[in-house]
Length: 210
Figure 1 (tube, rainbow, N blue to C red):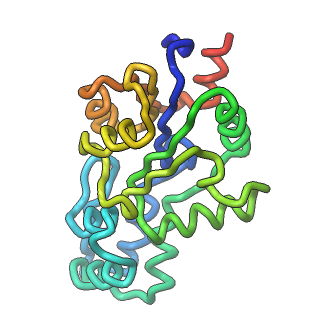
Figure 2: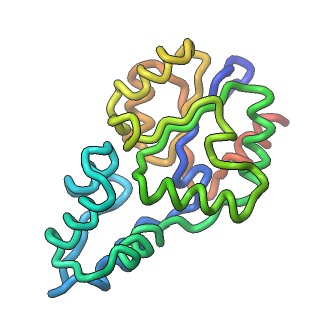
């Protein structure tokens, strides 16, 4: 990829900046389910209650109530939040350092399918481990699905970012670890990088700079 043509970068969050393990949250939640109920939630598909939470159509209290009702889950609010946040592993310091440097060279943005419980935890992780005030401070603009009412892979979310910020699609790189999101961005002409392990953003930009 020729980064000389790129002026703007849109980053995904989970799996790109923050290390995640979806299965860890599901295992923790299922410990509270009666009768061996299984929960449908992974990188490619999820049940409707998660979609509602990620697009802000339900709040944290409603999400917890729906989990309890749908999956016969018996747990306190705190236990549910801890289990739901279990998928959020860590933010390597070198990724924060990289974003600080990239912000000097490119217009950088964040686009994440997320929710109010996770966003609170993201910022707690940042406040605890780094000297920056929040995740938002790393980017020109951040787009969290539950706050904008839209989520990937819907094309409209990419079109909105381009339009609101005056970005040319051919000069914009989108980085995500989910192929369905990458394919959606590609269809409207955005440049893409499907980040798959063991490749990290530090390795990609390190190689690109050689």
